[in-house]
Image (cartoon, rainbow over all chains, first blue to last red):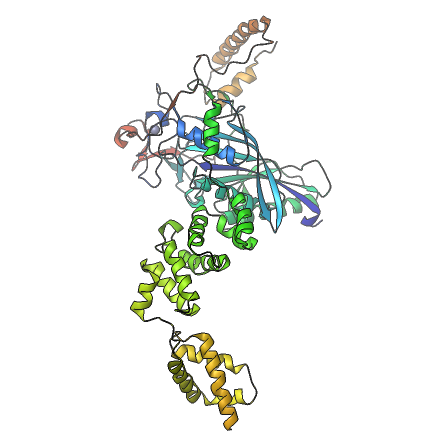
Length: 489
Length: 98
Ligand SMILES: [Zn+2]
């Protein structure tokens, strides 16, 4: 049967590196991109005789994430050892949280095609990051050796485990994007998938529509972009459906996503079936959170994207599309709010400029909101110049780009470049006369009844005036001149 | 009462990457069973209203501030590397050939 006749069941385990300065259990720096093995010490390497000491900020960030995702914050939590041999883990165990994680029972809300979706959060726990392996071959399986860099090992992570509530690959992607948006809002992670500070593993299974028992699941790893999350799950859902249709069994296994080939591949690891022999970490004492500690964090949370979204609809009357796009990024939302705090005449106009030129130039130059040179007050001043008729909307784009590149005030740019709109009647009359003289063909067509040609002629007036003619006046004067011609014919 | 078989000893030894001789397996099985027997005594204690203990030391919340400290010099770290390539720890093949 076709894929539509199956219910897809997906659960995600999302790992986010916390934005602390130092590692989870030692003072090594967490900064990205340093030379290999220059941010390691006896503690994060697990040399004998060393003891871990918990980073308070990491605990604070985990609680912050838990509160933003509506979790219950566990007053009592502890750390456990997860034992396994893998070269990116120099200690041969990872310090994690097993049966008493720091947060549980939360949920996330988002919209999929206009419909509200709620996904449950099973738990959030704190753990340490592993090192990074560079394989000698093209992949791990054809590499005769690997090189290990332990700079990353010991960086604090939160693992956010969802309930199997996700019902499509698209939902999985949007869920991930929503998590990123929230985690960035609350400042606990920079969530850069390309640098690996946000990653996810997905569990997927299929069952016939209406069934209540989940099918056999597979786990997918190595999805390094939001697009890859959706693509990998789409591929895997199809693969399951085909196998089930032909009466074959799904093998419960871990598979890796190959982004170049666009397929998932079985990971035939020699590692024993997961037997991590968890036990309480004897080198760390339990964490007991005081009410005040949690309340203080709760009070310091900013307005979250979902609340902002609702406020943008009500307070600014923005369409859902605009509100969602702008509120997805905290910096962008704050920029928007700074502009409308000065220019409150037309919120939609501000949103149009932000979603249009502002984001186009940002993408083109590969920069973030924080790096944009236009001050919100200059943004507002430019819109006022348009309203006052000093510049046309066409010229505004030129001014805006110049503001974007130089950070200069719009008035200065208009003055320097002589971009003031021509609203002087005689000047426009002269241009109109020139256009009529230079375009006898189109003029004849217009006089012959082809009204559409007017647009072309207006365009010529704008062109000749280098975009500076007042478009309404150009239109009006052109019509008048052509009517004269028609009379005299 | 649970008891530890030779198979269990072999399995755990394998997980821990320990290579035991037949004699050692015999010995380990015996001593592990003895330890288990010893622990069985705890079952005679009534723990109905006792909270499980997470740690043997009566301490909580030992934490440090998020402050960066100096890491160790890479040359020193590499003294422990059985095999080094330009500042990396080189490790043998991870996934065995088919
Ligand atoms: Zn360290």
